[in-house]
Length: 547
Image (cartoon, rainbow, N blue to C red):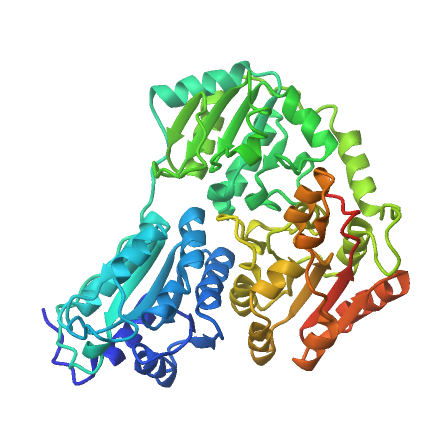
């Protein structure tokens, strides 16, 4: 069966095909190679187009969208320097296993003297992304289908390469194609499952650990049921923070962000069931948390990533189904509960009580506030349900600890590639994708400046419910630490002062500079009474920052 002949141009057909792939949000910056496709997307009312001021933020916004929705992010840029501008963002997506399709223009192959001509395939490969070429008008839609298929199934960024000289060609008819079937893994089974169940049955202090790969509602329910069956505490990786919110024996994050009670529980455990977690060095504290223990890792697929650690046993299968299979095997064997949670009521209650108190501020320089008490105070002023985006810097662990989220999709992680400046772009994606709760963006002054202050106009234009908390210590923090640790003058790490509150106010933000307790109260009031984007500039002492 063939469709009737089309009377539309290629750029129109590509735009309409995006609807088939669920592209409700398209992040972009137009140039001669993609502007007609973007206009066709807008004119056909396919979805929401969000224009950014820099190509890097275009791709980062699509990453933020993908992390908060669980869907493939879609972005579009033009050719040449537009592509080289997004290399860091593509590397961030590749390292993070984030599904992304970037519709990228390209120059005509015969136009050798074009100023923006570059070997785009090699640029894409250098960032670790996949390159899919639009071979011809006749194959264009099939090529686009392939790009989306690769992005979703491999969980990676894909650059779809569109030649500018083909965009006004007629779009030929093509045979109708059925939708792609969803990949559904079967539960793990067989001897390895039975061996793992045997390890669990003999454990006296089992622990269930969930990563981002175990964050579906079905998986959560199955893991909670298994934990109750074996009387085991529940923990998550940082990226799965909030998965077990409200569960009695939820000990929170496993890793460098563990609170003292969680650390004690983890160290005393003798068998860890890790569902959908790569067991990276950050989760295992360089294996300090897993040494000498039996560790069973359950992953939904066999895809490799650089964060994977080697467990005692690795099972591949559906997360929820495998958790239920463990429960069934233990029931058949009439294995009793472990009792590992019997003594956890009081210490977990004490941890919750401790977190509810704002710690005393330490001595800081005049005109500065102590970061941790300030963040804890802002936490109390913020809605409990919010999206958290953090840039990278020495403030970041304090932000993760003191501004927790209540569900994994509400944490946007920007540090896969170790680059500062990625957070603002990802905030745009998160804030335009999630509209039932505010997006809180925490950045250092260095990364905030690097990300391009002009992009704040995008948030204002989109009427985004965004609260930016700027941890402003007037320095590049990691470099400041390097100098001071060696008793060297840190002047080279200092940043020329910017009045961020005044600057952002001119762009349409409600802005508060926080230098003392009174101005911190003003910042909290600004959060509660906000009618648009808010910026809170925390003035910090670079020589006195808790990490």
